Length: 118
Image (cartoon, rainbow, N blue to C red; front, side, top):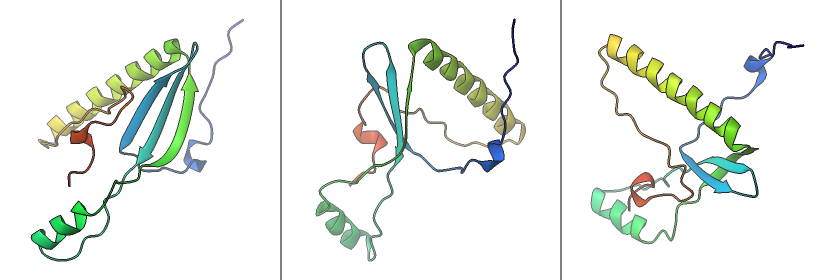
């Protein structure tokens, strides 16, 4: 006997900003952690900002949510994200909006180009 599943109370969930992701493989499961990195406020001229940034040892990535799932479910999530990206692309195209599209770095490390540059 099949029972339908429905999303409920979505509007009660907080919407949070993330711009970083890291994936890990454990025994039979996948762990995906989403977080955010925000550059520090750097007042002054461009040169002063470069000097200040040179003294920053690292930019902290604040974890927002850590999820664990199976590879099958992760593939289903990927399909959902791909569909959403397609809808976004068609919507942006219809508005003649030329926004840059980016990919989440889910391969377990954060690439230099994905982090804020010094």
